[in-house]
Amino acid sequence: KFNKNGSYDGQPISSYHGVEFRLKRANGEVLWVESSFVLDAKANVVHVVTRDIGARREEERQREVAKETEATKQTVLQWLSYMSAVAHDLRTPLTSFEMSLDEVIMDSEALPPSAQNALSLCKASCGVMRGTVSQAINVRASVTAGSLPKPRPCEVNIRDMFALLNSMVPALSGKDTVQVFFDVGWGVPVVLSDENWLLQMSLNFLSNACKYTTQGSVTVRAVKATESLRAAGATGALGTALDLPTGPILRIEVQDTGIGMREEATVNLFEPFYQAQNRQGMGTGLGLYSVRMHAEALGGCCGYLPVPPEQGKGSIFWFEIPLVAADSADSRCSS
Image (tube, rainbow, N blue to C red; front, side):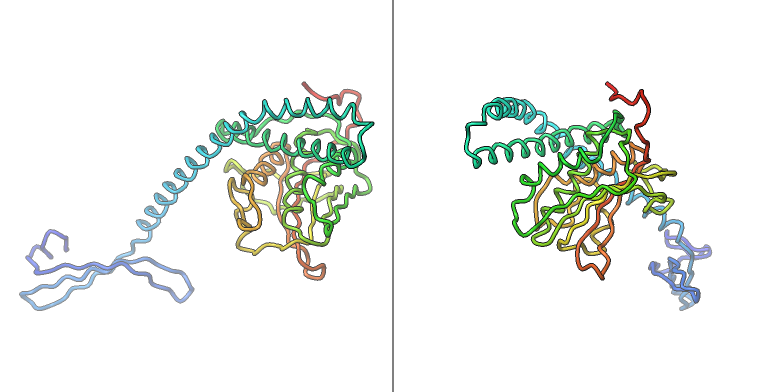
């Protein structure tokens, strides 16, 4: 009966006012409403009309969310493009440095032990840097294409992979107060998977653990499991429903005795460029997102758990993939 052009029930009115607010029902449900106050000056009466605007408010909220999501996506793409360009520029000089370092190492027998240790540290640092460069390039390519990367499966000996990670520890942590342990659980066979991905994913977790642990220990474990740690109904890195691994599972986890994390800081851990501990250490912000993409591309998932209170402080980062034993004759590395 009323509208905002100055009339109410066909009669002129002197003023119109509207206000939006929330009502809370007895069952706890919150309802958005709008109350309109119309003054009929001739009759000296104020008419109040209240209507449900929940649908309109929800449409407005969804438009805002879509706008923010698109803006975030564009920002992420810009950062990925920049970091990918930097990574490409680093790849050539890094290759030259590695080749020169290999030549020096070949003739290092006459060098004193301190110099040989320095060369080993340089070699380990190159391996870490190579992984970071490849990670920036690969993540950008996957996000731009809107699809997960494609694995290159081959036989992977987890013990050999852990030995390689162990050789990189001096480049990750120079703290004498932190010990790093590696443990391969009973029943973990040689598996068929992408060796470079498993190495880089484990290295990301290990690097973070060493960075944020000032004393105590960091433990890298590989275990054979039967149930996923991730609850059903999760969403994948590209916004689609996540299929959890079934059957035998290979889980690799890194547990530290570091500073731990606030619960609210763990919500966006595996999103691109998110850093929960900005003041504790700097990085690309792509490490955990890269783990998420590669774990899902292998048919698995990843996540975070706090260390149980009875064990003190710390964090447990894990990823899991379907366990496929490499016991067939045709399980050679694909090209």
